[in-house]
Image (cartoon, rainbow, N blue to C red; front, side, top):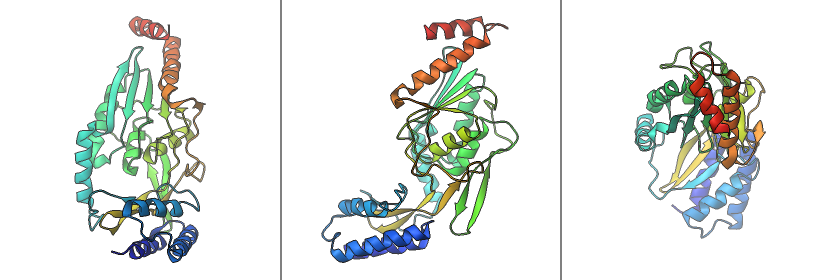
Amino acid sequence: MPQHEKVSRVIDLVQEHYVFPEIAAEVTGLLRTRLAEGSYTGLADDALAIAITRDLQSANGDKHLRLLHHTDPVPESRGDDESDLTEMRTWADLTAHGVARAERLPGNVGYLDIQPILFPTAVAADAIAAAMTLVAPADALIIDLRGCLGGEVSMTSYFCAFLLGAEPVELSGIFEAATGRVRQLWTPAHVPGRRFGATKPLWLLTSGTTFSGGEAVAYDLQQLGRAVIVGDRTRGGAHPREGFRVAEFLEATIPVARSVSPITGTNWEGTGVTPDVECPADQALEVAYRAALNHVVELGGENGRRQVLDEARAALS
């Protein structure tokens, strides 16, 4: 396929699917101008993807609006849910279903490291339930989202349910361009395993790598006053997207919806989630852990908790 046909295909897809019609008109106009000027002429697919992505993001910096170059052929159809789940299951099996670490730190502080993504519930619900059950008895919990690159909306609500009570809580919904309506998102009333619950202290670690679904968890729990965010400002991607085949090795990812918080009426797109305690990401665990240990010390050593109190004091020294 000639390069001008690939660019024309991207233009058509953005016009048809992008959740912001005004921005779609602006960036596709720019692509047409660049095409007429010959800016894309002679570019190999990888260079074309970089150039098109730069122009697509020039209007509003939407990090989900991209042209991606793949080393393997892009499937003719990206809408096969079962095929997508099969790929996700393979990826999940190789990455502990997104639970990189689940452990009890000295002082009875729970720690979960979630990466590379929050996999769909159809793939990783059991793993998340098992991990949360392990850390549920902790006096405080640290969830590490510094390496979390995204997540699927059903998993973000499912995951948050373990950190809240049994009463459903409304999280950021999804405004869908196709319907013109906001699809509400609530935490489920029932989850398998044990909840950490809504009252014990919770810290979430973030970095400039934290993106999309990982940001959704941080943003919603921060807005609800449920968690203290520690680390760097997140990357800033709040628009759910779909992938569309452009050519054999090119895929356009286009936001077809946008997140809408029931509390703020907006989202973290472009700005990222601002930490409550800002510090370099590589120091966030230490900062949060010390805060958690201080909480454990304040609880004291009554009711057979002398060992926990001694552990906390030793870890602080």
